Image 1: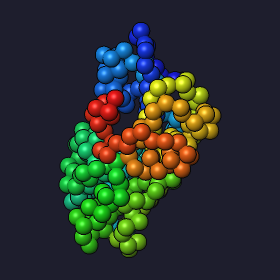
Image 2: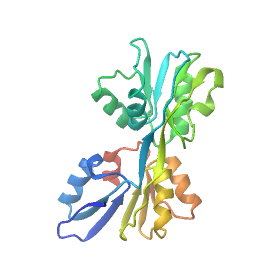
Image 3: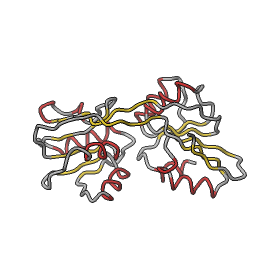
Length: 223
């Protein structure tokens, strides 16, 4: 079901995240008389997995990957934890985890991958991922140094979205799902990072802005 708020509206924004995930944006929209439609167009299902190899570093590309991984695996005290960016780091810290590496620009995963590769050195890393992962981090590392279990799968959950002035797409899979049952967006389009931007542009849709840190604060500044 679509999650939206209304209050004498004269503007409208769609974001492909559920309302529970965008509290700061919700407050901003209420304060500025903007109709917010917050709805993820994908859902996630666990995939059984086992980790038999040893590793020294755990790289978390999203809080979702962490949640599915931690349902099955326990992190050893000596394991060093790294993650894609500040937003993910804050959520992991809320789970009581200590983060030793945080990517500076999560919206540009290639740049983070290069940065992480230098930091990792010769250590072995485990990267829990989805079934449709782009493997941006793992693709830069030798297979002997990188363990990549698939811990969850992404499933399309498309729904018709009313016409909006602004569309914020938070992942390539949300873009793909949107296009399954909606016409190409006619309003301003904001991409949640370079990977999402590439997916949008491959569908001949113009991207107005691309978030570099993939954070809600950066999005609000653009709005």
